[in-house]
Image (cartoon, rainbow, N blue to C red):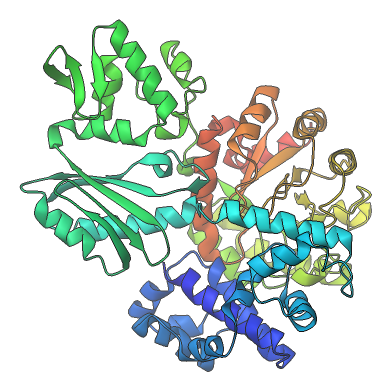
Length: 574
């Protein structure tokens, strides 16, 4: 999708203007538009081609920004952005990618030390030159060095949802070649790992492979062609993602799909099982001696070694083969099982749409219930609601519930309530008592010790009004490490207090991880999959949460928002 490119351009324009001390409101207009566009689940380019007026309906996009979006869609670039960059050292923008460094710090470092890029910044930090700058100190200097280290590690990995969107668009393009019979992505993307190194795509041909390879390297978004062979080609997209395409025989497509999906450890285990049966399994099929006896489908490959089909999300050689042998594979949760979303924001806080629109779009999607969970008062940056604004919103929800009364749809009153550093909550109990359901989340003081953070969250869990703990580890994938917390202790406390833990489906969060989901399931904790949506289009994020839930071996009954409304509310009365 082009959304991220547009958002990056607007964010960079805003950052450059802020470093240059431009008008504060002008800076904010670009930065807020970047946030809104990045949060859209729908492709702006597709929406523009259907009806350009739909772009003007996006919150924060006026005529000037619309013209720039139109320019980027049509030309792939933005003149204002290019002009700003031509008078600005690009290394300063790279510094903004570091966790904990904003435009003000970049300007401070540049003006005082003349540092223009990350390399110079790292050298200065190692030499102790940053700590004496106003508002910095030794701890900040150490934190900057850690951020640089993290950025180097993260830069090689792409978020699974971003890679998935790229793969789907590319596959649609590949299927436009008349010689293509089948086309699927494989590798870690098919196993739904949270980040992806590169994307493997498999194709079977109706005829010759050469026209497919020629078509592939002509993909409009190619930045570099790494290889162009008769059965394998590799390209790098302008987003930096590498794509490897292989053409395989149609009768071996299932064997190749299984092999290239992996994981390596899973494949080795399957090959060992095959050997004990006098068989050989590889990307070309299942062989008994020289004879190829199976391989057209993945089901054939599993059947040949005496196993039922194992979904890609489980193929990590982490117990799935033993479970398959015993007939104890989980009946994995599916998107159709979800009855509602318990984590949604409106423009009352930092969402993009008014309450009525969020609710109507959720109703039209087929949900039976949703919870409105705008930020609480301490989240100033997210325009958190004070008590008066919250209760005013609840009156609006009461009116809207009357409208939907006969439509088998319920709006639940909630809030994303901040867990304060001492473990108390951002609203008093008499306000919490008026909520139907809400996630309590940590949004501050991420640097607390493991003991302090664990005690902080457990205290919140023990509050009788808390039903869900939002994004429990606080991580932002490729940007921010989880805070130090004893997740096993958190899970134990959640079980004891009948509190659910959230699997936050935002692409940059996917928090909890599959590891902790399996731990939670084994201990009997319940999970809530929430989109944390800030626009109705982000309902699509629920699918990403389902992918991670499947990797965590979750079944329908492990997830509270698969329950009917009655069952959901009764669950928390225990």
